[in-house]
Length: 119
Image (cartoon, rainbow, N blue to C red; front, side, top):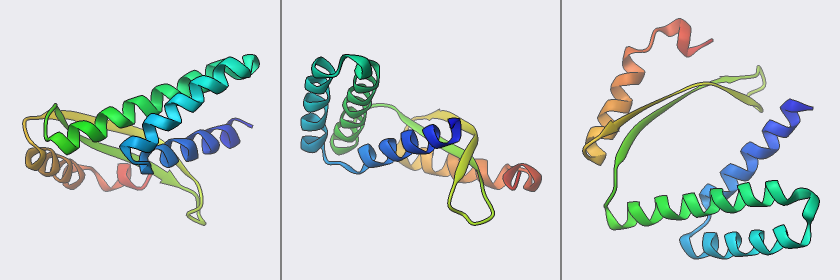
């Protein structure tokens, strides 16, 4: 059951990441409206609205070229059929610019031991 829940939450996160800024603003508004209508699921609607707001802020910062940059490396373990993945670790490092973040992420991957990368 937990795996099924995690897959669904991950899919919601992926779907939110694909939306445009205006769509994210509308989604957050509608999720807050649903929060008031569906008392039992209030926490889920709050979390999804917060995720939409957070993603919209990230997109606005990227568009404007402002804000902090982070190199992020997610280490995933995929099943044999490559249909499900489990995140093993996330490495984040603050960087001064986008090129520096890209280089740091690439360098982190190159320095990773092979056993850890395939675990």
